[in-house]
Length: 252
Image 1 (spheres, rainbow, N blue to C red):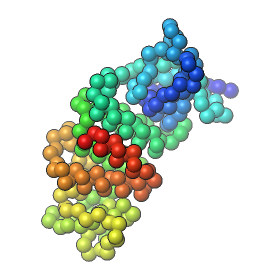
Image 2: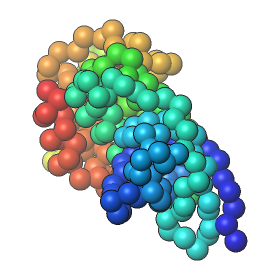
Image 3: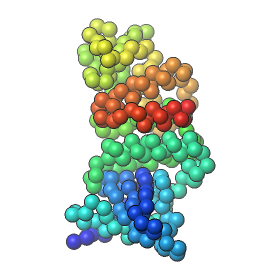
Image 4: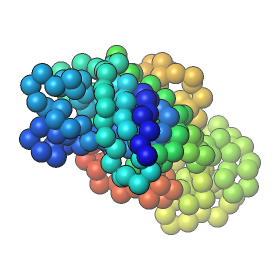
């Protein structure tokens, strides 16, 4: 028995099934990640023609049945179009990256509204103000926070001692964050100065994107954050770094 379900949803990707029909992957506010079939959506004068595109936020009405892996779309009504992504390729590429990253960790058919709201907030920031490298790195940190995988940045992950401002230390993805000099490091750890984790912790505590937009990190600091986030995401979420690194290289 099918049930008619309505939710807010963001288009992560869509692809042709036939000349006139599209398969759409969504991240939704109430039902996690799901896939729907939009039958005949590309036919002239069809009600869904032009109502969805990559990274739109839409009101989605669909028929759900537990036995189906792909649901049937009833109606789509666009809410936020994010037209900047049609003109600013860097903003579009950054948006595609954070949408794909969120979709990879979003549970299927299970509610995760905090992940949906984070993704919507990140896309709205890119739409309004464009791409800025620290914003993408802060997005990764906030995603980890919402998954309960927050890296420890202001205290040693091994002994829980607070760091002194001038102390150099190491970052260990396996042990969950910063490791002080007194605790034995590992060959895979990254040596970093106290400025890098302090900056990351400051970003993460900001209630919106304003602080990170106003920050002016050095190239060396940005390179360090990029590496630490890459290894932490790879270790704890089992994500391959190749696509991320290619995306950041293109953006840079």
